[in-house]
Length: 162
Image (tube, rainbow, N blue to C red):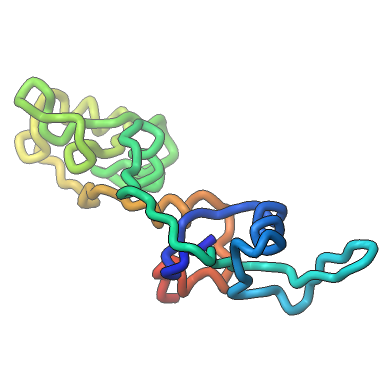
């Protein structure tokens, strides 16, 4: 679902999309040419992307900092060795004992082996190199990762190049 400004808001169900269209609150931007929704009396286009007719002001969408979201951001891979086949933990890059905070740019996914090796030290002190740069994810990142497969027709609205 897009805002009036074509900004991606969320992924909604087909039922919700149809209700918004039937109530004249949204328009179909992209439809599936091969599929139709048939009722007893009518046939409707199958919406793939809809756009709201009125602009909805949504305050800055901040992704909640949680263990689950840090793991998702880091693709369930250790930030130090890249492994994903062993148990993962969350590591403070700058340890709490040295003033490190619970922030997006100070937390990284780490396997238990790397986390134990690093201990209560910085990566430099433990002679470990971060393979990723921890950043604050935006809501588009989580829209992309909330479905198993991205529909190719969504790409222009989710800022995906390929």
